[in-house]
Length: 304
Image (tube, rainbow, N blue to C red; front, side):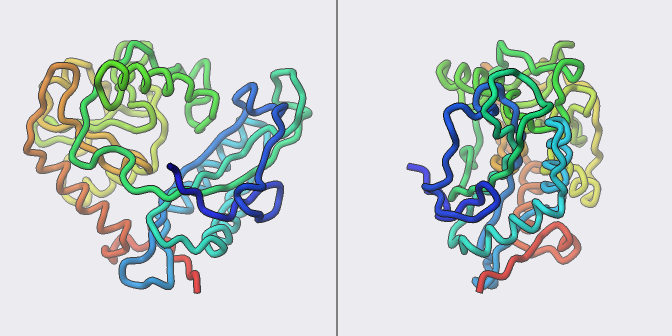
């Protein structure tokens, strides 16, 4: 059973999680007129009096940008302050995940973004590994990623995740752990909530923004880390058949972190994953604030 953090931010105040409730007529519930973020936090392994948050500023910036699609002004610095207060009030003792959400809170029935109230909430949940750390099996989904010309893919808009839900359930019910979605041009896009990387001939390759992917913060971090480690990084279109013969394939995301893929459809991938292993170790060290050169990526929040 999910363990939620005891305090939520709801309707401009902090209150017990169980008291943060929405009306059944809430506009966002019916029309997907919401945008969300997600970031991880953990108690500092070297200092129990503080919590570490990974790339908080970037997460706040992305949610602020997503809110613009909903015709709502949500300053990134406001999100930042509320999340800091949220962590200090909850004082989590285990690894956790924060979910901020901006949404149409009015009770109207017309699908619109103008002349309807907006609001902002934050809650959290204890979370260890979202996907098995040892690796997963994936299928190519029969569902396709939306196109930017018909959906604002630069934002984490809640309505878009029906496609992810359909693809995820299709994958699990057909014996896989996760789904890989193609775009409308027949190229690899991303998984149901994660970006995708593959390794071929020593190069780290990932679909670019022109392939209808989400602008992942973990994705951006991995590309920066790889460059610092001297690993060539290439952003380009990826064919499905390339995945079947890749040297390594992994998914990345706030919840998934770096999760290797063991098999795609019936194609087994190599068990030796030197680049994936190196990147995962480096990212873990950064998140735990053990890499001085990346300290600007980690926000230390005092809780005592």
